[in-house]
Length: 291
Image (tube, rainbow, N blue to C red; front, side, top):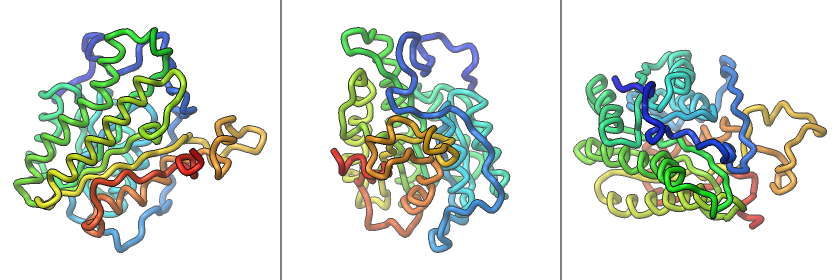
């Protein structure tokens, strides 16, 4: 199994010093285990017997997404650059009685992406669902962005997605069926000061989703994206006085929680979405409609 430990700085997906880690998104890194019986999924979106691979990062969103897939009946493998990010999500899958695998390695390199997919195929006999949920957020004035910062961000946000779609897609094409869901940012369709690199990476993810959906549309695969708005893990616990200043830019006047992505993710991963492909669906409290 690959390991993220001991990698050179050039291979590290973490934002470089001097850049904002949240890209102006106000995302909280805190993570708490999900209470038993906290149900997000309608029963008709059954994923029983499905084999999923999802990627994890430092934001703490993947435990909620992986939990939703497991609650719907899928076995879920979790891959990421760091063990602690992978472990949180895998624990949530296992807590819901489903099988889980863990892979830690550099997913922006061919060897790492291939090994993550082959771990699923080798242990479970195939892969039915790929969820690209990991990304690095980065904010810095455009003229100050170093070549290495740009390359690392694009590697984490675009190259890893490309490699995993290609590696998992080969198996899905052979099966004649598969679902790919790319979890991206609403900044794919909006600009933000000091976030040119990040916005560009998200725009690339949208176009990858659209074009790949067309290319594989007649081969049993469906490729879609979920564009998330501003979210925080403690959003529901904040009082009126503690609300994030970003809330005033959201028509619903609150931040979202990654749990709110779960039902849509399960739908897009299920057989029920057979007539939906190439779409980017926004879960952002109305921000994209507001402009």
